[in-house]
Length: 384
Image 1: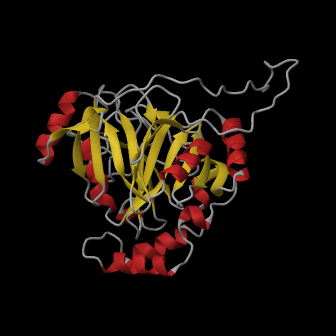
Image 2 (image 1 turned 60 degrees about the vertical axis):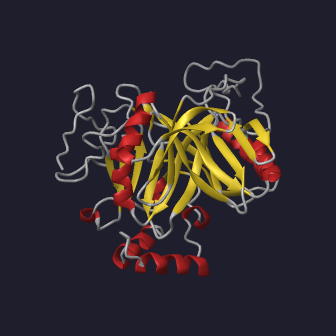
Image 3 (image 1 turned 135 degrees about the vertical axis):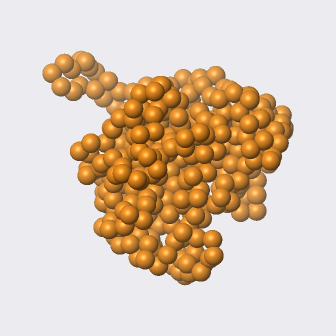
């Protein structure tokens, strides 16, 4: 496919990746990272849906992590950030702990009709006393995906203010000591979701074509670039309006499902002090603190009591639709500019009987893009 796919404003794509940690643009004939004519262009994630058996325990962690509870019933917990907007997370009572699926936000009501016609689905009311309408879709990996319009929007809450820093030749703080509070890092909003799938390319094409996402960065396995990317960081196409570097990231792997979700906080001090707060309450840090390469976010990863991974982040990149994809080799050491080495917990490489069964099942499947050659290259990349 040609590489000169223009942005909506007619301007040619530009590169924001030159000379950054060996990143480069696409080579001739490589994937352009966007569909020529998407069905719709979603504008953001609305919320993520989970199931958990113990909503009291889920609420305790949510408050410690920095969420605000917007609603609670015996069978459902709804969580929000401090920014004006929809709920960020919906947790329903279930027999086990699992990620159900993402819900994206449509630009207008007509997008729901277009998606319903395209998918053979229907537009339905959200129900349960919640405003809005939704179309229920399923991506090629089998993940349920909702697209919503008209959902309830909460007013903004008081912010956890960023600290005034004395940096450079013009300090701004005088006669005042710096003492960030040891308290939860107040979640401002839902930032992104990361998924793993053995049907990577088919699922990538679906999100580009159906929801209009565009790729900010591709990662490929070292020595296998000609086989195509194995990870994509996708953002919403808002034209001239900048969007998060990635709203959805996805990578090839033997597993199928949720990897982590990320929630924005005010700044590095909020992230670090909030991490101390979590550690003092016995929660497990999966990886951090550090700064990513793709997306540039400051990050800190934690496990909730059910072992699901969630991220605090701050200071992420924002790209408009003119920025073309970067390309870089995948490696564990290439996931951060600075910080501790990526842990086995974060990478999902800790050996276990369940992991062996997962790998064998993926290799034997008739509906997989994972081969033994790619699996070995993936394992090698995650050890570098």
